[in-house]
Length: 462
Image (cartoon, rainbow, N blue to C red; front, side, top):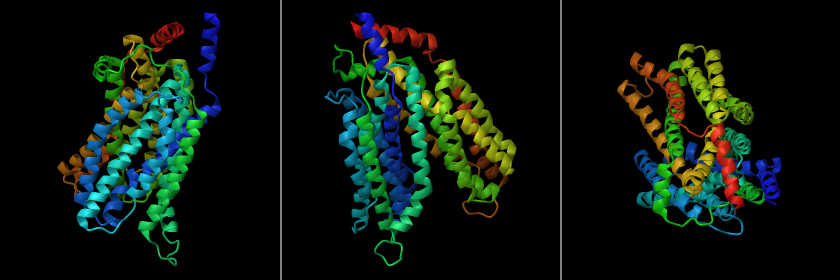
């Protein structure tokens, strides 16, 4: 009987293509709205709504602090959610509509005075960030309870990030054209940018709702919570910080996101002031995104052959080398594009594996401490990644400052030019390669994962 149960359990943990595709649409939905916020909310505040850069900066800073408060709270709440739909799926069902509505409100321009505009923008920004946390963090955590098979999780997250980058590609490529086109509706050919932004966000919001509902309808939670686990929040945090594998992944997340933020912040300066062709940055970004999408499917077979840890280490080292070689390429654009493409292709397999390993870390907490905190594991790591992003963006600005960069100057000093070049090549290359050193301390290799999976299955049978 137990043998039959184990066989059924193993079969049930396998994910169909339909379920992987359905789940992946949730990240497309997230990118449809959140990329609009990430790329255009700041300039919307200053150029469309009429806030000063200082006030807009305050809103974005307060929003980051708000995330630091909300993300762990959402993780704790979702871990304690118990419904007939599961722990995490209900947030896709009930959170998608508020998320889309608040996105539209954040890109709406009511006619208030300056103080009223600031208050409106701040409140809608914080509410949107809250809604995003309540739908995206449970969505990310869902991958850990759909299956307990690490290889299946790698495949699932590969689908997820292909869909995510396609969503990003659509938004970054089409949003401004949609703003212009939708801004002319009812305005006799004159573009009303405020209307254009509002309608564009509304369009992507409707698509996000549809995709989140598909993700809800096509997925299933299979990994149960330990039956005797209590709701003590302090214990959750205690065992989380005793989970060494989680600490390693959190450190890797911080370092890698510092790298992403620094390079993303500096690449426009690189093309404007060093290459002297500002528009070429779009081709650089497009080719990099295509390289990521093309190489992502290699993640699962590589992980199955060599293990998550080994693939992540190799990916970090190789992509770090190619990023650094952009410095050697100088102003040779074909070489710059080539090294960027190779770096992104080498980096691509690590993208889904980081999230796969976060799910494995939740299993490790259950195996080691008999306590499962899936939502908290994911939300705390996401918070750490946001911290890394904030540090990286700030560090890029500081380095430009200390190298005496002068905005819009026809000629930059040699030190400023060197700083810009290092920010897009050697510094991110070294940072990402250093993730391999941190990952060396990650304890969940193929052997440990096999033992852990077997013992957890035995516990659940009993």
